[in-house]
Image 1 (tube, helix red, strand yellow):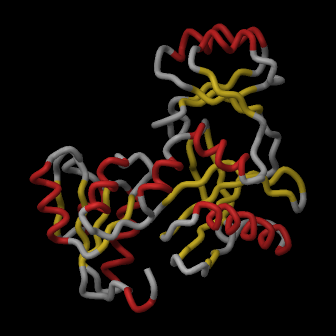
Image 2 (cartoon, rainbow, N blue to C red):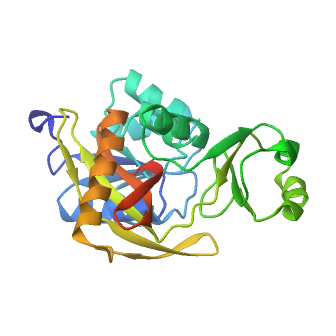
Length: 275
């Protein structure tokens, strides 16, 4: 979307998903003079507190689709697990969705995401993919590992850390049949960083200062912005995040998460289209 195509205040912005990130989006939009429509199956989704047009229905609901799309001038995504088929239909019907289906499909599948990063020469931790938990017994990847479901895992859900060979069977028993999975070699990192990148589609990228993330038991507890890092590290992280988004080639706002392995060496972890 170029400046000439900008959606100006007074218009209605749509949000697919109504979690807390959607709430932040809606609050900011209201302050700028926009109206907001939020579609989420949960009637108590947090973002609906700020919505002029709340829609409560499954994403497969055709009448909800018509109700939502008739209200909005442009739509964004609350998180990466919004169904791709929904955004594809919206795009095919001529609706503006930012970020779009291609980047959404990439972000919600860890195997596709890591293959994309590796193919484009971007730094990513060593990993293997498996379709059966029993494959863990024969992996040549050095321990320790973190095993993650390829899809739908978040905030520590769908993840198992394996520190030594004795823990392999315990993980196999816990994983069940929800594959495939990606097995990552644990990276001893100094900090986890996030960089928000805005891409307008004509090659212009804007980055925001790095944020430092602190986790407890796999769940994000605190974000510190700006991150407690040297300016040179911040610039390198922002440059790397911009490179990731440039390769993705889509419009919208993206949050790229990175590990700082040592001074001046951020290593890419994953990328999440975000509102």
